[in-house]
Image (cartoon, rainbow over all chains, first blue to last red; front, side, top):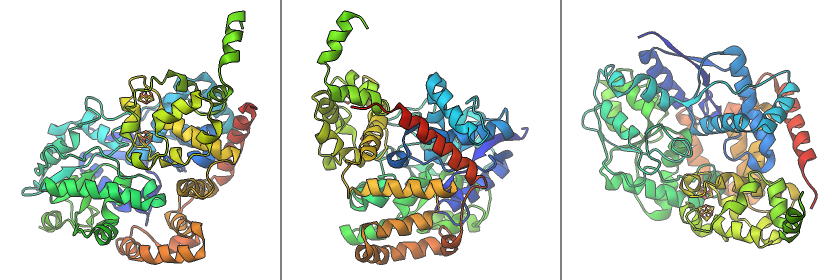
Length: 299
Length: 205
Ligand code: SF4
Ligand code: SF4
């Protein structure tokens, strides 16, 4: 298959020494196998996620995403914009929709961008990496590259919020999407059937500002994974990954639980199944070691 | 405006009009049919004094202060449950963000609301250099309630921080430089212009 190229929006959490840096490592490994070339949008900026609203306001927020889109149109013309972070994808796609929907907003946004000599047309598709995998490759094609099937691992597919709503993945339902389970199966592992908390909220950015309330949500997400017999949780979102993995010590001391549930990315699973080693799969970035996955990666 | 619409306009309460004019997606509020689906969808529902359905009803009832000084909208986790479920397709998430932003802009949002503080820190952090510096953001966050509580939080969070450093997902060096874009000047100019345009659109009530 010919090389596929995309205009890549990596997002803040993917940066070196940031919370999702291991996500980026595994995405690079996965793309290497699939012959995907990610052309990073030059000088991309933060999208302000879903927490920029208080100080930001509508137009400044739209302008942030529009700047990235303008740079992408200029430097990576003709390619789809692809994001790996759910919040980045959502903010950018929402901006595209609003600009195309409202002449006013398009005009005002371009007035703002003109202050830096930029102009946006919003003429590129804005997609999540998972969409690329499913729509541009498909499960069969993804399965063909599997060298080490992830046999004997049971995985809870935690889709979360923003990869799923309001846009979601074409052909999947909001309340019970199946694509993560199918990906897990494609990699040779066993998905937890009917994982009850698959689309529940982890608190998002409020894990910082309302830690106790958010940790109560996270606790339920982990508990349901244990209930389903999961060895680990898999997610397509860096916010979900961080929230569900790193607060387990605090949850344990508060709720007297004994959680030690690893949380990995779909790209981690795919890298290992595609024969990449421990480091290339970003496994050195796990705070809670996914032992069964590590064992396969080290084999 | 026809004579008839003029009469109708006079009878519409002015807070609804204010929301329609000044709040992001505010023109949707009148479409709410009070079914309550959104209120049943909020992950932090029990913490909201007034869940979305109630907020919409209060806007129509003209309860300006109660709505704008409420901490409810600040409990929105942006989970988008409500949006995909609302039978009237109201962009509820954005209206909640819009109300929070408007209250913040007017200076009447609850002062010590933690998400309000965090959202402000986040924006300041990103708008300065164009990208978020997670370490500085985290440290500012610990200390947002003052020094003593900051030290307590920092100690409580220390094991987490050490885990993140060990796995190279956080770097102490970031504090002295770290991430940013090249064209900060351009970005600042864009944001300044966007703010000016938006401020000029605000209507007085
Ligand atoms: S779900 Fe929609 S129509 Fe129903 S109460 Fe909420 S906003 Fe109103
Ligand atoms: S997006 Fe906000 S308002 Fe809507 S259900 Fe989630 S928390 Fe509630």
